[in-house]
Amino acid sequence: MTLAREIMTAPAVAFDEDMTLREATVIMARRKVSGAPVMDDDGKLIGVLSESDILEEATRRVGPEMGCPSLSFLSLPYERIVRNEDVCRRFNEVGDVKVGDVMNDEVIAINGDDSAEEALETMIRFDVNRLPVIDEDGRLIGIIARQDIMWSVCRALQADSCKETSPPAPEGVRR
Image (cartoon, helix red, strand yellow):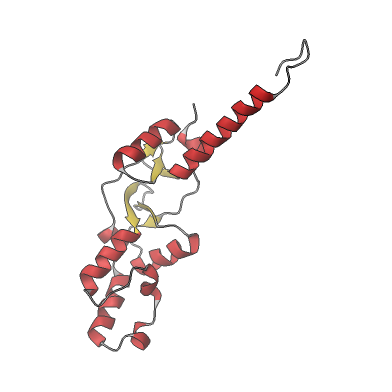
């Protein structure tokens, strides 16, 4: 049985709850992630921030003028692009919002000692593609994605296939 901690990505990209959305989107772009766990000052998992959370906040604050399905707008020099001062101010305000104010605080996580099968069942049940992996104290130790589980299954299948096709061991030799 493969454990979550054996196939998770560690360390995981994570955000501090006091970080701004502007800072978070820069990290997301650089690390090529669409979301990440949010930690409190003690390193405990308290939420998850996704692109959807940020875009929903931007749409709520900016309104229909936003018309932008990408997060790249948070790092733009609005004063040079947008002529309407009110819209420009609202765009800037979105970047100043704290991660903790828009994150999803209904966290679905698994323990590092849970099996990969349990992780996959949880992903399917809650329709998520990745899960934070925590220790007994609720501290983030990594993140596991459906892709991690698929690679694990592929490696296991390849290993089984090699065993089936390899010639028998010479007498007295154990494999």
